[in-house]
Image (cartoon, rainbow, N blue to C red):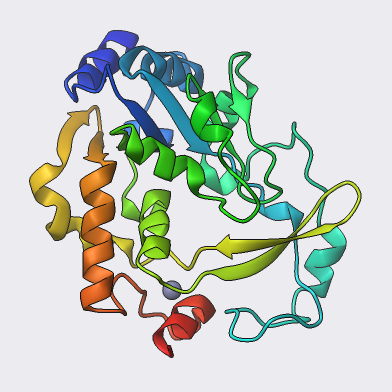
Length: 260
Ligand SMILES: [Zn+2]
């Protein structure tokens, strides 16, 4: 079982105590952690200057009968899911597919959470980045972190959950999509919804030279500086527009981007 000091030692080796980070985590990858997710969050907060995490809520999403064309979606498809959609509220739990750590962060007394009905972020000591999110620029907190020389921290996860690559895709001019999120009083149109991330591990060899990596228990923890990550992704997409797209035939968003 991993103790507080095992984890603290590992994270300290990454040298990020004066940096703000966007973190993504799978605690299962670490095996047993003494004190569980709460311990992990405490150590994370003690090892960096500030942290944000996506606290996305996909169960607010509804699909209309009709909408804008070339949107990587089949309109009218998920009518049964529409009936089960729940309106976003500030205390809505994070989607379970994002893991337990962002949910623990969201519930922390010092955490601030943004109000985007699908793509909210929560953070501690990073209010100025959280506050920048708008419905038109949902990934603005990542841009703000990059400006502050922030880092991405991948705790036992790979680049398929690295939301910052989506931010770079947008900067590179890649097509963004429109989705719809339910709130208490209406359905909100949410532009700037990103594509699919299942091809993102293609970035690994391109960024190897500036990745820091430690092994903690059974997990690999990687830290990637945002600025060079964003520059690299942007350059790759500009040079080869289908870069980082997945190969699945049934992936509507990757297919839509490819046809452009
Ligand atoms: Zn795809």
